[in-house]
Image (tube, rainbow, N blue to C red):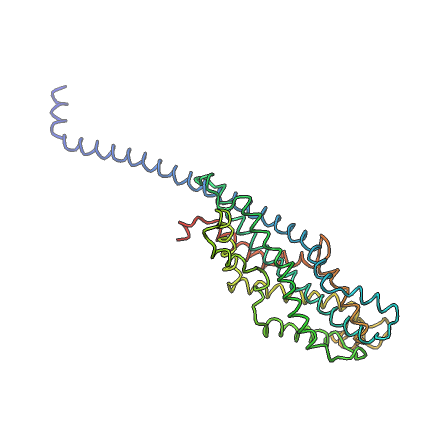
Length: 362
């Protein structure tokens, strides 16, 4: 029996070898497939965890940005009111001075100027801090990512503080330049309008449109020019005396300026300004509603064009709008800008750009 089995094996030796090789190959292939499947699953799990961590960090960064913007509104309001002091004029008018008309003319220009400057500067503040804090947020995410050397952070704390202090330009020299441009536009548009002349809300809207056209179209500089100082350019020329932190700060400021010069920034700032001026008109509309029992029903679409007020009565209404535009937190006016879809998408794009390793960008 054993001899017959042996002879059978000899006759079918090649088949047995082939079958064994196939079985072994299938076994090894199965093991390899299992290993690769496990690697893919582990990679997908790691990518999911990293994405979830990144999303959580991004959302936390946006909350920080929102709180920072709201905390900057009181100093912005104080700076505007200091440079455009209408309160001293209203106090002076109560004394019934001989040059009462002249003071009213000054009050007219200052009231419109400071409200319009408040709209521009609050929008600029929102978008600038969105850019800066998402650049910082992206770099902080990379600094805390696996594989990064803790000895070479992209954004150390001292650099962050130095970089973010550049916002003071918007509250200082940048604001003064903006005030000068807006005041000139207001004077050009409203300087010749008599205080006795009556204006409807549509007339006020037209005046604001003319002023915006001059500020945004006829100005020598784009709006982004008011946001950052050029001091770092002069600093860069003195490279031999710069510390490592100075070099990092200059890099961050240059990256910020690149973002401010981008079409995306211009589009987001324009969307913010359109929304903000629309909200300003909504606030003013409350004072142009027809009285109850009047000839025009308050629900009529054209009712706001029927009611007209003397410019002398509109001036104090406009003058007080800064308290709504730059109100303390929570500020509905600014919150609406912070939560707009344009702003969220722009913030996500900035964060995505600066939280992606450079080798992946390339």
